[in-house]
Image (cartoon, rainbow over all chains, first blue to last red; front, side, top):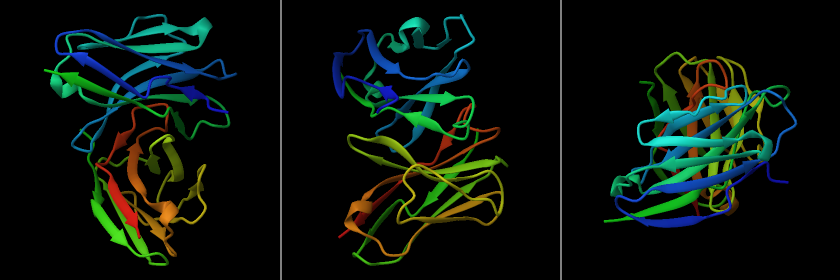
Length: 116
Length: 113
């Protein structure tokens, strides 16, 4: 069964709009981290933001922020003021403390197209 | 900024062929990983290593070998390539393990015809 689920495979928005990308996950661990990565059209995969399960802070990095609903096992990435360069594929990922601590489990990703 | 360099960036080989994908990281990270990315699957872990000479099996290791010759260098070997191994391969590294930021290379697109 999938542990990290990104329901939407594609999304399109106009430049200047705000977008929320949803991700749900499954874990029985108390300690875990959630990540968002972006696969750029140039080929690079870049880290965007991290949310720790133990943190109640609303994580933010520039135009990126997250909505973390721990009880629902949901984490959404919010991108404000969209720009054409935001186009790419966004991956949600889960790291769990314990026996799986060597790896990050990725979702299938969401393609974002930002139209000028 | 960590640098992870993969080579080649693109490779075409025939079924049954022998392919080596190379990865070098220049930030003295302990952990290195090989992933494959396929539409509908996201990124899947093939092999990983937490130091020179160490090798650990990931989630989809069949058909792949890997070697970590130095702290910097991690190689992925396909000794009898098959069309099912056509994919985008990412090498990645991290300092303290996967609970910290993972730095990725730009990927190698491998086509097995």
